[in-house]
Image (cartoon, rainbow, N blue to C red; front, top):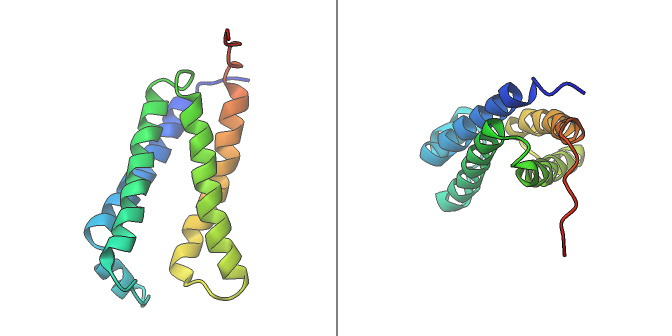
Length: 130
């Protein structure tokens, strides 16, 4: 499978999470107010999650620079995206999730598929000596 798409794709993934994380890190109250969502009882809950998103964005930037060397970051990215999408969509299907979060979950489902495709596009990891 051709791999030319990997670097630009992971630049997009990086920018998506960096921008999203930065916005929720610096302006969670304004975002929640704009969408009529009741904020958490302390901004630190949202800001910590936003910082994690931003950090993963930086990790995806590393993947964009050297996909083969950063395969394990892609695997962590799959787990990260599965965690968010499954939590948000699980509560949404129960009718208990503000709609503001749902588009991000569906975007993450698409990222999951692309991350898995990227792992199959990369050469297999060499066997490690014990």
